[in-house]
Length: 233
Image (tube, rainbow, N blue to C red; front, side, top):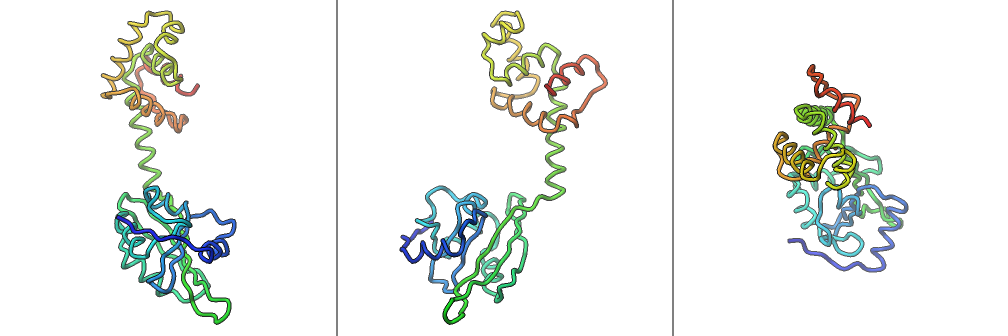
């Protein structure tokens, strides 16, 4: 899908000069649209660029860079218009929203030729913006996971905690003094109650529930209050 181009010693030197010691998410967009852009590895991670998409030194044709934005749900035309319209060293900022809801803060500044002072391109830095809505969504996920676990009995929570610790059925059997067959029955019942199909998803539920233990949801039913306490351990 993406065309890549080889890097030259001059290109490597330019990248080093622009981004010495800078491991943030950035891309350098040359003023000449026929020239390839340069993108840092953190940029590729932030924009979910598949490994091997960009050439050596993070080089990629500007047209292909535009495809990266479009795939993420950002208008490439709008991005390049904003970038090309900036003409000073003073950074200008604007926001971009990806289709998955992530908001990115972009900061542009011009890079000038050290001899004739002409603009050779623009350096754009990106960072993800944490929004209140994102935090609220995370809290909702935690609360939902905690409520799911509240349906489990004390023994089931005990088994689940041991599974979370990575113990085998045999180790759980020894720790709880019950047979391995009974352990397997408990695990099956846990997944049935939680509406899950595999151990990985079961682990994910308890992981999310323990992200903020101080917000632990506590039902009035005392029969499950004890097991929930064990999540704090």
